[in-house]
Length: 277
Image: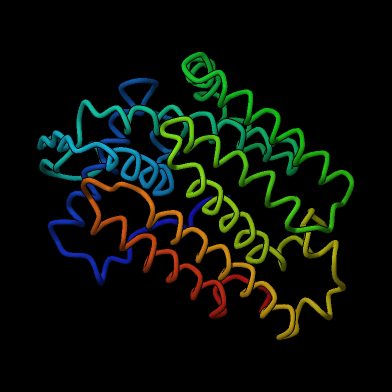
């Protein structure tokens, strides 16, 4: 349910993109160091965003070192000894574990079954560090599963459940991030539900939009405009929440993600990339 959060590279200065990648590589290295090498495969830009925005509330400059990479030749800049990255690594484990469990339950995925193996001990460790987040994740997944079993057709209700979890994740690091986390989670859930309409119809999988409307209406401009309105409202609320934060560094990167990266993902969603067209 992730993959919508990224920088818009064409409008980002090279120095800022290098810093963004340093956080990304730092998260990758931290996952391997704190847990195991296989969980590094679950690295995401979504969790990189969490690390950057959390760290940007501090006025302490990140420590960046040139280190080797098993995937790339030569050395690359890497953020090291960073509390926000460490927190994001823990959350990455918790969320990835639940995603794999969900895939196993819903799709009987053999791939997810084997992919979950290196996460089992890692999840226990991350849960001990953040029991409140692990509890919130468990409760949210149970509620989402119940809504799915009931074939809930209210997109706002289902999206709120996921958004409440992402709000707790962001708020757990700093209370000022609660609204940013909520609206980001809401955007991700609604965008993902819209993107998966065709696949969910084909495979008979749960989707609140499919439950709410007949297949004919899902192909109309009225429906698309309805989704656009909901996502626009959420992006505007996210932008407003972000504007109220006390950002002490990385503002160019965060501005790029909030005002351009997410808008680029929004545009792609409605330009015959995914969606219901």
